[in-house]
Image 1 (tube, rainbow, N blue to C red):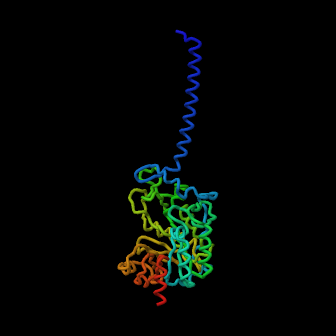
Image 2 (image 1 turned 180 degrees about the vertical axis):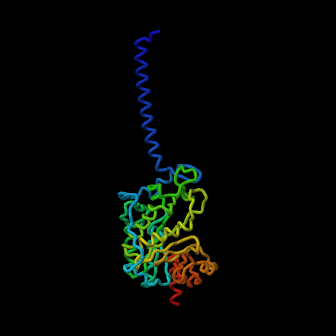
Length: 349
């Protein structure tokens, strides 16, 4: 049976229209999928969409990325040309400034700083767990925080250093969403291997045994050392407390090896590299280093101090606390700058 000419023309036109609509639909679907990628979050339960990501710092100012496996020169403290580590550390008794303080309460921060005498130790957040930098980093993988007045933080750091404070930079080490997102091979994977494991806060964690991880952290530390900081504290220097990611090695050994590698790359005779860890029995690497502990009650100070494995705990053990309690002062202590008025008034009385 033959199909009339007019019918064939109608069918051809219909087929052309359907083909065009199909192509338009395919392009629209592809664009939709590409747009959704920014909201994809891998968790231990699988893959989910988190549309709140649109307001986070991932939209920040991103520098040109370097080669992933960048090399950091490592100098070991051996032989006739050894680095001089005889410059003794002293006991800390000072304050800390969080990113929330200088983002929301900068005027209060500046007032409280005026109460402090020269030489007071002051620790300030320079990089958070999202991986956002609170200063104008020149590193290729740096993502600058868009919720922070970077110029104001720069002025704050300059003020601290010009007034002769002992300045300490605090950075998140292994909890780093941005670097994990851009360097998936350096992160901890879900058991299903569907992607990187993320904690309850949606943050990725880096693998301490990865050379890319330690090179990245060393790069940040060296940049901060070059900015004039006297000490850098690596917080989140631990494995996350979960059994939902893949790691088959000895976690304690992995952390201690990473600490030794970073110390070898970053130490100098007038700079300290320290570690904020979970357990007080962590073995610090050789060199100018301290061990920091958070969330310790005043009644538990002696118990924690008895667990340390190094000499001079009064100098090398530092408690981070919001409390003004004097019982912490037997060891190193950094309090919230918000209690500076109370503590400084007590010193003067």
